[in-house]
Amino acid sequence: MKSINTILLIFAFTIIANAQVKIGDKLPLITLENNLGVVKKITLSNNKYVLIDFWASWCAPCRTGNKKLVRLHDTHNANIEIIGISIDTDKTKWKKAIEKDKIKFQQYIDPKGFDAPTAVKFGVEDIPSQYLFDKTGKLISINPSHEELLKLIK
Image (cartoon, rainbow, N blue to C red; front, side, top):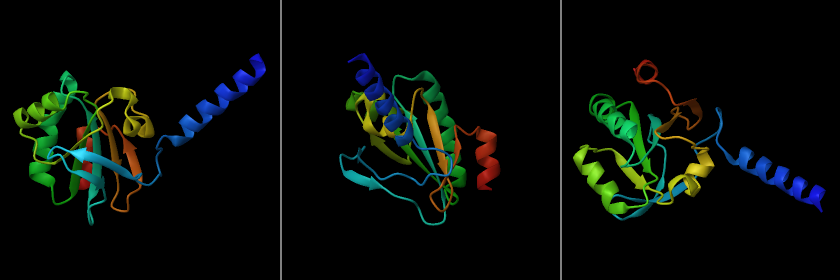
């Protein structure tokens, strides 16, 4: 019985590990609710890099990072599309954070914390976590620095 359980556990970990996006993977299909209450598919923007940013209203480093992302969006939105995905469990706090941080780029929520299906699909273990996809939709960087982002998108 122990050996069967061990085999099942190894199999489950293999499936989970293989389900997480890796460098070179295409942007997975994601459908979430946005901050306007509309359920939408997240898609690639024409001829732009796409940065997926996982964050939460209660995460101080995320909120600091939002300031940089707002500036990046304001100055380079011709070259990059920023998409925020919150793992908040409280939609009201999430919407207040969007307003307070003056976020104008796309915002979505997967409200189950680190157990959110999208967070699991991407392998998010810490926040903020960022995933940069090139213009063809291929993952080219995980947690790029601000300098790396600027270099890539200019």
